[in-house]
Image 1: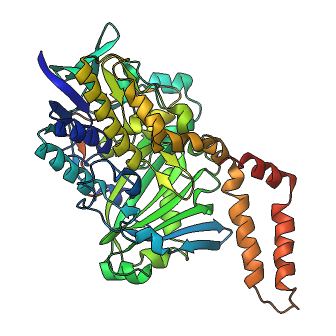
Image 2 (image 1 turned 90 degrees about the vertical axis):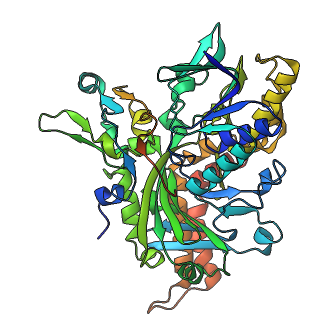
Image 3 (image 1 turned 180 degrees about the vertical axis):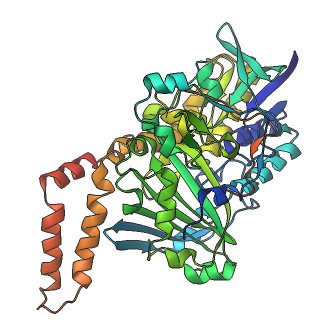
Length: 93
Length: 429
């Protein structure tokens, strides 16, 4: 059985900020997006639709690779690195 | 506003290399790193080719915290359940000073940051830069939160995403077509197991790349590097291909599926996953290298798009270190002349053009286009597997001669109009 992605992320050290460093503008998603790339490009599988069909991101587990940002043609993401002292802290990689 | 001579944005290999050169020559330099320490936000596959950079800072490279010198190179073509591997273990890879080592960034970058500190530079961790300050077109410093720091020159080594430099108009925003996503697991295994499994002498390492089925026809492949007591196992996939996914799979699933293959399972058996990481990789080649210097700034490393995936050799860290070195030399020259304008910093691009960095990228100019050919990741691994499998197969029928079997495969898979076209397109790589 492959290890679950959540379990893999559980191995990493994350220092959580109070505020998200990724914000999705769902109006833009609705108006412009055609391919929902974020749902399947994210290597941490952080994007999902909620009950109301709104795109959400579990930014707490973000590996800060930026793939979602680069692949979002709709430009629906406000994406910054987490503030200093926060976010993933790789111990080896 | 506080004022320093040189600010380096980003304490990765490019930024630290620049800071080391500057501080060694007595320049005042401050490195701003957003992680808890250098390497905390960095990811490599990875292997560092040390040969190209030995002449820069020769005192450093014999004591760097490497994992293993790469003594054995393997590349596997996967298709239809058949894995064909080409392998070379050459004396020349490790004789004297080995040409390359496997590395882990958290160790390598922290060590280099210490060395930079010893030279008198200030490396500030936990400091995220929010903006490059500009005045009349000249970069004049940085803003981090409420704080502004002025500098005569800013070395922009912020990494592949170019969040700051593109906002300041120094570079373009990264595009999916020119980038790949890389992600990996670090899997712990005892040193003896690694040496037995990859048939290595004590302390030596292997680098193993895979292409074909593992990316389901998408540009990219899998990689495996042996560290001291772990392996780095991961995937690289072109973002544009991933975005136009062909079969509905999600990026992170590719590695799980790869690990479950009967040919791969024994390589990772008994291992314990210790960390999972991901990073974007610039793969646009020389056509995507931005303007390298302007009034008050230079760009280095991934920010400058300095990386080269040539299928069996994958480089970036050596380019980062080299670009940092040349950035430092150019800044020192500018300092001497008292001219930090684009003209004063122009020697940076000139020396990169004279060096292996832009020369190798120039030589590889057509590779990014060639890599967009899906047949590279579907037809050819399949054809090679089919050909060799037929040669090695004995069933209950009278067998054709070995040459006849091989020739049949060559005619079927390598002598079509498409393959001739492919060969033509690859003539320059």
